[in-house]
Image 1 (tube, rainbow, N blue to C red):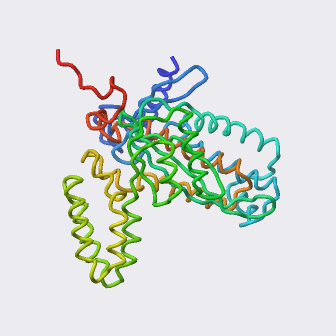
Image 2: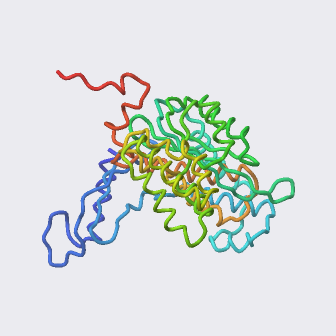
Length: 375
């Protein structure tokens, strides 16, 4: 009944098209362009909606709230900063710019409580099934602690499951990227059910590498993009383009064995003129080429942390609005809401991040990895 009423309400899109669906009219303003699916959570239950799309312009029904979770979290963080008397980066001006006046502690508590419950449930949910691929990375934000302003590491984990779907699996906050911190984080994920990890992709940090070996017993892939930045620093300005092209020939190979052979050939060619760079290549070979042992269809998404860095970029963009967060609860609230929002967007995407046919063989679950029996 609710779904029927909602679909009737969305017929107001005709006000933007200038004509009814399928009607030929000289005053038509825009053409319809199919539908997009949207889940609508109501007190009466979950309703599946089909929102009309337009070829020119856009339409969104007024009874829905588009992407409001993170905005509410941002508002709550700014309000809390105001209540706590934080003046850094002109919080008063920021509050006024957002149209907020007369903020009370009861308003803050009510708004924060609503968001905190959802974020806590999201970050603590059980992790089910196999997750062959895991990307982990850290970004830093500023927070007030005991009257001082300090930078803390916010680490995020994103995984792809045996269905080829991508999800945010967890986040945590710590003073630095020490091995103990990464180990504790991965153990939390394991307690929630993380299993079946075959490859972990991250930056070159010894703490991460040791924690992955200790907790997950998985292969570690060093981010290729960041490796290249470090490698080219040994090449000098005049030689960077040539060196980059040399190293790229190893990445262009069809399989791991050919890639390793080409890698060593490139290192030997550079050894006489650039011995430090050649040694750097020798040390990094195993970790930078680890992704080459996995299916070719996945390699463009496995060789770097780019998939999670885009998410970190969004986190940076949102947190810089506040500048200095008032406490760690505010960090979890704001960043947790951003991650929840992103996870919801991934969940409703029609296309899988990786196809089921190519990722299913990596699963430890025999019901997933075995091919279907022909009838």
